[in-house]
Length: 151
Image (cartoon, rainbow, N blue to C red; front, side, top):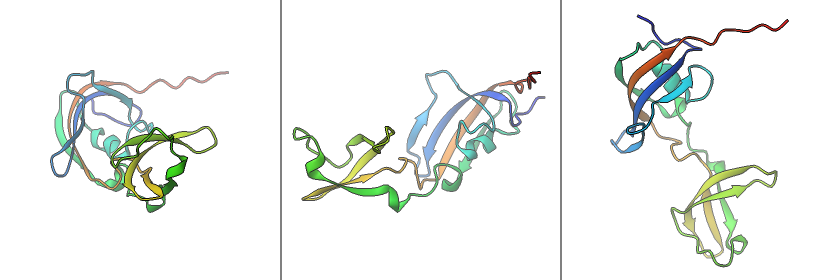
């Protein structure tokens, strides 16, 4: 029976939970997730978790934060002057915004605190610092893409 290896394209149904059981994502009701194993399309722990699985197999994997979205980084939490927000906007804790780094790159942030003169923004991935649990069901394995050598 064929087992998943690096370079294979797989289709997989998943249910992602935090260690307290809270669901953060699931493919339920959608097409299965399709990706190439080892290509960097998914977090490292997910790649490692599907490696060796066979079509139709189900299993649960535990991914430590270091193999998921990494630890929360304090330097990704910053204060932004309140007077730089649009006048018609009232910043609130939990509000999600998109910021620009001045070089045309946008990135999501979440307001984690509102002070008198500033708003505290967190640019960490929402799952940074979290250990993750995935229930997996491997639907399909497609072989590695053939290497094409151009003359």
